[in-house]
Image 1: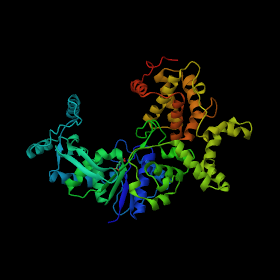
Image 2 (image 1 turned 180 degrees about the horizontal axis):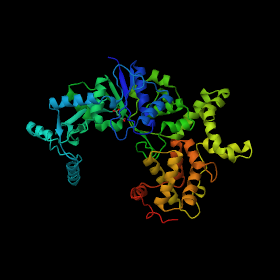
Image 3 (image 1 turned 120 degrees about the vertical axis):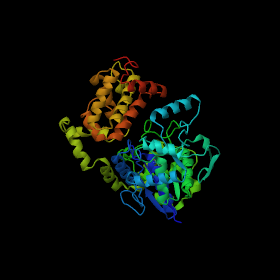
Image 4 (image 1 turned 45 degrees about the vertical axis):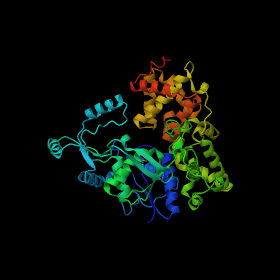
Length: 502
Ligand code: GLU
């Protein structure tokens, strides 16, 4: 039987380095064993999924030179490869489980569910659903349905015993069933949940090995139960160690640059990012640290995959990148590569209107806009904080900008302008003297320059976000406790209590 693996990203945000990391190990596994690598888009979360995120995932993986054999963009024998195009398939299989008695209709209302959750919390139980509709008589089910009561379809999870399986990386895994709720498989609107769609698709797409991040380990017993309920053989599970941030927690965009586009736009080489990402989860023989994708494909041995999480250390990435620049780009090609990166005609044509009226000589060009071409700005509290504004306040303003831009989902100049006014209002500070001063400093590393809003549009979302995060860092950061307090104020649209108006 030939190997078939897949990545199944959800298009709910910017293309994450974690997606590239897992994709790489699937790609390497497929290529090493002469198998097939599939891209499947898991857009079952209707409220958070967006077509542009799917487009970005594809663009970002392609930039990394990660190529799949079947996928929504190229088709294949087991398509469609986008879950929103497969709804009827999931419905059919959910009803199959109803027929065989492995699932049931649950009529719990939102009100009931919230009461159950409260009761479970009060009793110190983890699971929230008390299984009250699990054993309804067929007559009662019919009667509720006839009266038009909405329902979901839930999986009957065993009440006792353990789920035991062998993970090809982690070894034997044991999970008590008592810790697992009766999972919803099909929602009342007829759309599937992740668990149902994931298992049905892995089976129908003939996936032999599920290689995914270990954050999904708690889902695996539910998946194994689903396979058993359908009477299907489950694939081999391989849970990869997670990428970790400096705080030892799962790499998150709140604290680290995580968008693949950030690395592209900051001038990293895709082959360096690929080398670095594989290094995070794998050790080559003789501790080789610099290698190509072809080399790791040839050498690959699943036993060399790590078990503990790997720190996403930008210094290490910088080192790999520098080595790749030195070793793979000859002097005569270097300038061409830099031009292709960000000194290209298309970028310059966008940049010129911003500086046209600001230069007395061409010699002023670099001074005006060098901030577009650097990764680290010379930030200091003196520069970032307007007179009489405490660093804690300015930190909080930057955090407020990130929240506002994320809420609006608009990181263009227009969104940035709106966010800056919102932040001024919520914190009760002067828009121009305080907010704009701090933002100029954070984005440009200076207090004067081209239009801030146009600059942000050109700089792009990912680099803008990281600049705001770097500015927070340069002012000493915000503790988790303070962030919670701020967030509460932010949600009430009033942070004046936290910081006296300046
Ligand atoms: N849709 C899940 C994700 O976003 C897929 C997890 C899996 O590989 O099963 O990563």
